[in-house]
Image (cartoon, rainbow, N blue to C red; front, side, top):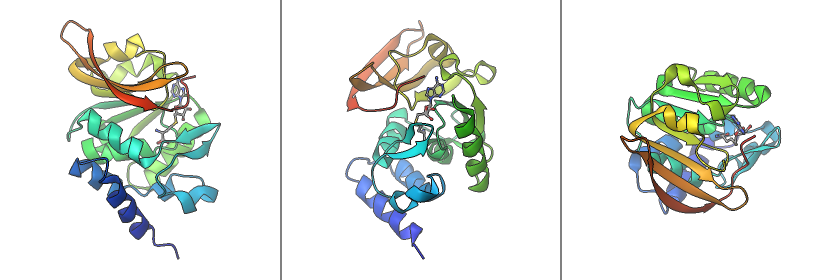
Length: 207
Ligand code: SAH
């Protein structure tokens, strides 16, 4: 029998070197990452590295999920738009912080969206909303969002995502075609973005 809880608490301790937000660390300590990754990758579920999840896509390393959650400054009740559901793990971590009913996630590949929905249901995050579609269009029906983030790299923040984020809200994404930077942007009242650069990153590209 593998002691997943023990592995997860070791991972959480390891992340303390890079992340200080206790709510984020508690979220990482709560979400069973081993249930989101493919069966043959389970034994590596609590290693701090990316893992393949099928359809040529990867789940980000836990430290990247934690850093993104910290940069987004998430509070209970925030309405959040995620682009790139993948296996649903990152959405579950966000759900721990804002409440599952406040998380809206768009996934391009129907097979991944279906699988993510099943896993989220089975792990207690069934109130997260997942839609198959092109994330560049966002999810206008539930806008405005307090926070919007992409788990795939885009040349820049797609305009519909900026439109669907409220004034004073925060967007976060890997930006760039080859070399990517993690960019956090606060939306000003005139609609322009106040950007800060959080270093080089490597994500799969937006389709
Ligand atoms: N957050 C995910 C990581 C997913 S990797 C997790 O925790 O597993 C990035 C995801 O973005 C992939 O699943 C990919 O299919 C998706 N993606 C790529 N382009 C997209 C687009 N245009 N719209 C929505 N999702 C997209």
